[in-house]
Image (tube, rainbow, N blue to C red):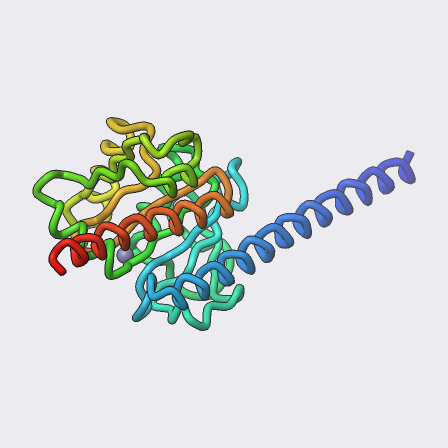
Length: 230
Ligand SMILES: [Zn+2]
């Protein structure tokens, strides 16, 4: 009887250890991918001067995100600079402090069920989010590259990128983000005025593709304006 008890105890311990190891492996893999994507975005000039932040869901139940800690040079991003946070942005793993914008990442993950959220501060997004703020958003239509957005089949698709007024009050801003996502459920991203782009995807690969597509299209709009004035 005693032996059986000891055995089942040993089995329980081993299962628990294996599960912990698997979680730790998931986090490391995700952090490695995020770091690589971040260095790539820095090289493109989309996250200069410690701007931008990146996150990916590590587990849904309970909710855990791998996310950049605040104030990092994205050109030298390493997996060890990522934190694991819970649904209230408490740090569960890693050293450092999450960006105040972690609340926006959590809001997007919860609102649209995103698997990853990427945030950039490009010149193009900064320019357009200022010039189009009075329209409440920016329409992208007629471009072949739109087909890179999940579910979009034709260049005739009209993608609406809402522009939200910037704020340093993240609780208030997260609330506005949540309402925007509720009112426009099909969107793939939004801009914060004179700040930057937020986009997301079911997977990290999809979110990265959305950054590339939206940054490409915003650059085209700004440059074609310059071409018209030539
Ligand atoms: Zn930002």
